[in-house]
Structure formats: C-alpha cells, structure tokens
Amino acid sequence: KHKEDCDDKKNDYWLYRDIIVRIINKKLSDGQYYKRKAIVDKVIDKYEARVEVLESSRKANDGGDILRLDQDDLETVIPKELGEKVRILVGKHRGKKARVIRLNREDYRAELRLTDDDRVVTLDYEDFSKLA
Image 1 (cartoon, rainbow, N blue to C red):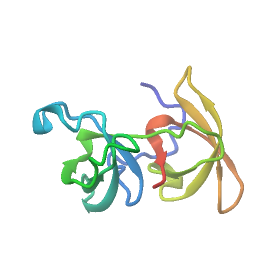
Image 2 (image 1 turned 180 degrees about the horizontal axis):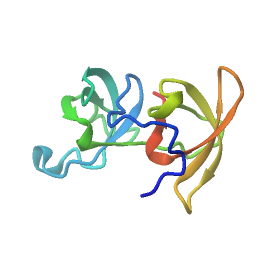
Image 3 (image 1 turned 45 degrees about the vertical axis):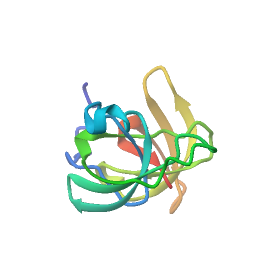
Image 4 (image 1 turned 120 degrees about the horizontal axis):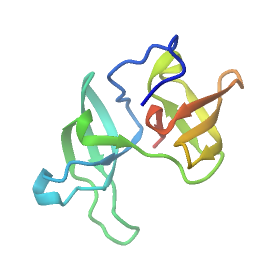
C-alpha cells in the first residue's frame, strides 16, 4: 500500500473508545467470535482494548461477552449508510468525529465531513471506524 499523504504522519496504533470494530482472530474461542462486531469499551494501552461483543443478530441474545484483544485481532467497521457518524483513528485528524458523505468501494476510501469545522477529508477505510 502506498500513501499519497506523506506529510500526514500515521501512528501504528488506532484504537479508540466507543468505536465499533470487527474481530478477525479466527483462533479465539475456536472461532466463535470471528467476524463478530464489538464496541471498544476501554483502550488499555495504545495497542490493546477491552471490547464488548455485540449481538450477532437482533434475536440472537449472544452479545455481552467482554474480551481483551490486541488491535491486530480487530479491524475497523465501515458504515453502510451515508450520513453515519465515524471516528477518525489516525493522522492529523485522529480523534475527530465525522460523517460519511461518500463511500468508494472500489478503492476502499471514503469522503468524510468533519463535524467540528465542516472540512471534507478523504481517508482509507482502515483509518476510521463507525461510532457506537
């Protein structure tokens, strides 16, 4: 992956409280959490989080488990709908909230409007995540 924004320094850590993430560790509990969504409840150090697993469906009643995971076991969750709120996780806008105004599924990027000053930024899907 090459990055055009060389001046926009990225951290190698991206976890943030109250974002939705997807668990991508296949080995955890024999895969029972693989691809499940969770909310970051607490960032323990820069690279580790306590997450609460969400229900797999409305009627499933299988959420609520609390796990402690490394960021390598997690990935960002991209909203399906325009207008949904996200948190920017890396770069100079880290921590800012934004709304999705355009999703480009071909190159895995999105246009986001910052909620604090209405500026529009284009970021890779891995650089932001849906807010809980």
